[in-house]
Amino acid sequence: MKYFFNNQIVNIVKSNTKPDDNLVDVVMNTLSVGKEAAYRRIRGEVPFTFSEIAKLASVFRFSLDSIIAVSFPELAVVNTRFFNTNQMYKDYKQTVESFYTLFKEMNRSSNSKGCTASNVIPFTMYGKYENLSKFKLYRWMHQMDISFSSTSFSEMKMPDEVWTLHQDMLKEADYLEDFSYVLDRNIFSTFVNDINHFIQLGFISTEDRLLLKNELLDLLSMFERVVKEGGISPQNKVSVYISSIDFDSSYSYFETEDMSVSSMRVYAVNTLTTQDKNFFDTQKKWIESLKRYSVLISGCGEMERVKFIAKQKEIINLL
Image 1 (tube, rainbow, N blue to C red):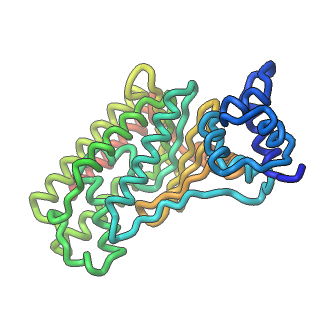
Image 2 (image 1 turned 90 degrees about the vertical axis):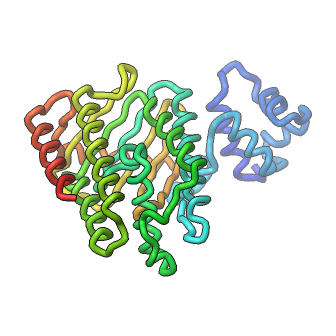
């Protein structure tokens, strides 16, 4: 076959069609090309154009990652979402949009699952609170942009359109059928320590301190309720594990019968995501291994749950 990648694309299309479907007809109808043009692409005599590959990927729900993974197993296509300080909200909005699209797509499929191993409060938890969400971005800006270093917390405003998209994305996340958290024991103390640092610097007012404290207490109440009930709704199962060992970052994976995506948090608010199968399998194995060193507190482990919640409340009240 003259054009090597054609073979990978044809195999992926075959695997996503019914056995009795005529492959030539499928390619003809999808790409709106003639029979001879479809034959030549299938035989590898004429390369698929980029727009044709994009069309096939959209219809048959595959990614460029999957093509490269077959051809070059040692490589993975990784989507890097690094914010630019000059256009933070624009970049942040694009990241939120990408996860909104992911969760929405997952909810169209059956057996949607997700799992996050986090050494800080996960985004899917604090993201429902405007001031906590704003604080995460505020801290990042303070660290990354020297011109922002004299800006107070109250001066930073999250655009309404970003906040609305935020909530739409998290609603879609709540619809996933099965979600697990593996959490570091110090997730709340880390957040509180960060807030206290900016209080001591004089960048967070008494009024904003109370807002942040109340949102943390409300988050903890919501967390306790979800843990007790084992989910957000009867259709949604949530499992929460408290890790007995430390881990160095926050990792996630998401999967349905049709897709698999892995994600890693870097530099506080940035993410690396990929649909590479080898990367996904390794990340999933790593996260699942952490459960062996953790205590399940959702739906059982009442004594451990009560102790954990009481300790977090004590930490938050130090604000």
